[in-house]
Amino acid sequence: MLANRDITKGWPAYAVWAYSSVSMLPSLLFYQFQLFNTKFCVTYRGMKTLLAFLLAMTFTSPSFAAEQRSFEIHDQLATQAETDKKIALTLDACSGKYDDDLINFLIQNKIPATIFATKKWLDRNPLAISVIKAHLDLFDVENHGEKHIPAVIGKGRTVYGILGEPDVIHLRREVVEGARAVEQATGIAPHWYRGAGAEYDSQSIEEIDKLGYKIAGFSVNADNGATLKKSTIAKRLEHVKAGDVIIAHMNKPASDSAEGLAVGLAYLLKAGFVFVRLDQVDLKEMPEKFEKKIREKQGR
Ligand SMILES: [Zn+2]
Image 1: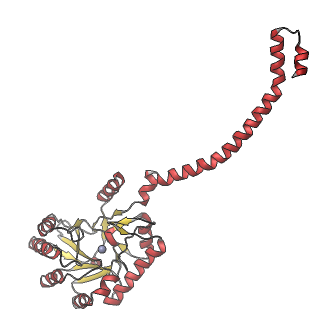
Image 2: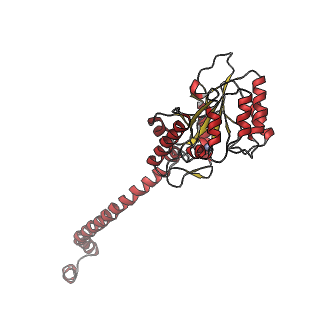
Image 3: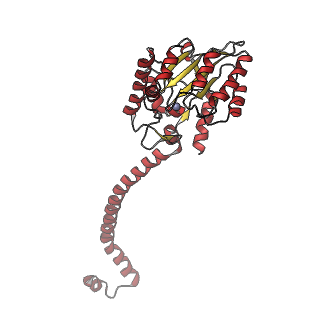
């Protein structure tokens, strides 16, 4: 700098300005290069952060979350003639006790039903097994899992407050061991599966299908997990249409389910409906309701 001052001594102002600008150019370029390097380093680290951020955004975005959400499957009987008044009654035996009032009513009125039993429930209710086995003309027993764990995969995920499966391995065990228990109890291998809480996610649906089981959805929820009053259950059954699949529960004898179903089912018999079991029919999904449920879940 001292040398510069010396050189420009006595120069006109514009010449000094031009000279200093040109002389500063190399250091400016060097500074820019440094800055570029710094920027590059920051950018490189930033890129990693950005990538992590984008991944996080992807995994938490509504479209990805939608796949991870659970939903009910709403089904009706697959083959329906115009004049057909076929309907299906499905009863879940999750855990807990045996509602003998309900089963006795079905036997007395010759109403066929499909029972979805867990290993847990079968182990605890040997009397129920003997009654069911004595009436295999009426009852088809299908798979409701080993320990009544919902078919949603991922740590901390729940259905109606019940913890789901941590991974696919656990889901497979729930399904396979549930099936084994049904076959041991009745001598007949099940072909239908209903997860605890009757909710699923895309991964569990795929796995259950790979294991060779059809998922049993429903179209009429008669007792909301055996929590509804007698009059409400009866009223819900009054709205049953041909092709409907009714879901109710047979594991809570202290609930209103048996009484409400007795009234509602008697009404349906009188109205000319014919009850079929799931081992005699196939089901088809109801896309409108299915989509609606997903949207409802997303909105929460
Ligand atoms: Zn259940």
